[in-house]
Length: 531
Image 1 (cartoon, rainbow, N blue to C red):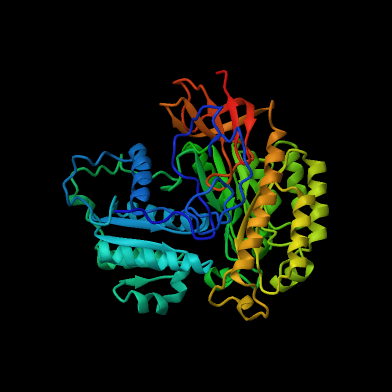
Image 2: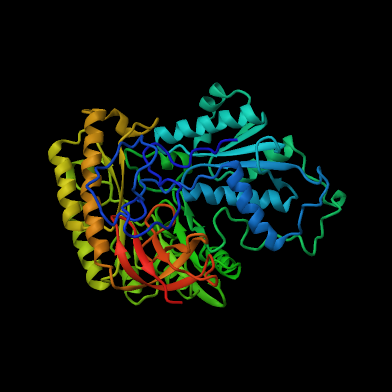
């Protein structure tokens, strides 16, 4: 069965090829002899560009099963000798952002606690759950295609996720679906699964041992065991004209801080080395709770962004912040980063720089304010890395507006940048704005932006040569003797890598290494490890 596509149309993905290549050969992984490479069309299947516009964390049926099987091997009994029909199997396809991936993880955890197994392919599944994305039109189409594939290859399909709000559209195209639920509707999905595939009787499973077959308190994760996403809130109070997230996921609803910290501690105890903090608006955390105080570990804690960052820091593992709006109180969090108490990394969706376009987008910040704040953050924490995303070709965007964005990028010198070309999303207010930009101009502007940012990224990475960095090992190519790692500056699956040569057999996935940077390309670093 072919894998579901792992990136939407407006994102890019590096091709699969050996991680280690001789240093005197100019290649995707080691452009030691770089040539000018303009950004390619967003519809191209591959290009040497790691900084994706979306934080997509798609998982196919096979990928979901592989990760769950690896995780379950640590906490459950082996099932290789189990009867063929010991427990019904559910297939999972998870599409979209890390918030959706966390929803899938929760559903899989609850179903696993009920005794269901996770299927490794469509044919072996008693039912398939497709967790959809509806953020942009290409993601909607990808979700509809995934539903169609699941129906054609299995026949019994439940749909959940953001696109679930468009139940009529889904049923019109795929009338065979058994049920449709909305985003983070965990209980509805569990009920729908048990209705069509009854919950197994654990007493009839000869391999089940309640003293051994326990789900880890942290739950089942669809990420490698050394990092995990921690969702601190759901929904968003902003009403950006290009976005329909509030209509899909509602207004801001924060988790109480004791709940967040209990999960964080459970993840650490399960071996997680890096927590990636996610939400729709991370720096607004706790606003809806009026910063309510809870008790955790015997101490009072406010459900507030800064207090949460302080508490997470005390866990002693990497903590990376995503989806942060540049509100003034973020300055205090940057001070924590300057004290080496959080990873000095901020993911902030600036979206544009032109005052006129930001106003049309109904964004909550002006470009000159953000530039001043970026400069101030670098004074506080010189090592800070900032990544952002931008929309190119928003309705009404003129050449002057776009040039304003390019000029802003030159001054801001962001470390990581991804971009969308604007596309209409059903229900978005921006669809009704005048003066839509022609597709060819959108694409031309996208390529200019990415070419500029490629130069900025290359310059900044050159400054790393000769320095030592701590990196976290994500993968190992034993044949080539190369560890594929990330530094504090690299979020998984959207940023670059640090390729470490000449590793020995003692180096393991999930291990921290201290390495020396020997070389750099536009987006990646190359390092040596002395052991």
